[in-house]
Image (cartoon, rainbow, N blue to C red; front, side, top):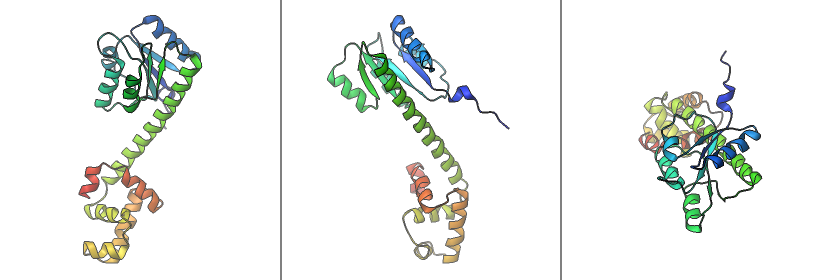
Length: 214
């Protein structure tokens, strides 16, 4: 029996700030409440690092030499890394805040920030990331199960999720109603869905191109 990797499930806060004192202070703050934290002096340093697949968030300084925190936000999004981000700045302005928030930032805090305000934002960000990671795992499970379906089972699944009745599906596919029932039962079993509602939710997590081809 495999033992769960406890550390892999512990939240990790990634801090990017070119000011070493600020970086160290933020790291100590996170560790003081039991969170693991790693500091980076620049966006490039973070991008060049191999980051563990753990729940957590990023705390980014907006203005740094070279690439800014906003640039890093865009680069991470382009790579499919959607970790929640909290921005810190001493030079915040409204357009910058709007741009960051529209791109998915959790919060935009002005330095000096109260410890509790930052910790509250980090807690919210970690909770959101845990939920996102759970959604991603579920979507992968649904995709893996979907690949076990035959072509006909995929067609029946598509029609069931559209609310079609067995006799309507049978007519559309040119097969007998009893055959539809058999395929439908196989779909429920293979997709591990206990109800039509569960089946529809699983279907909606599948990539659009797969649903279109079904």
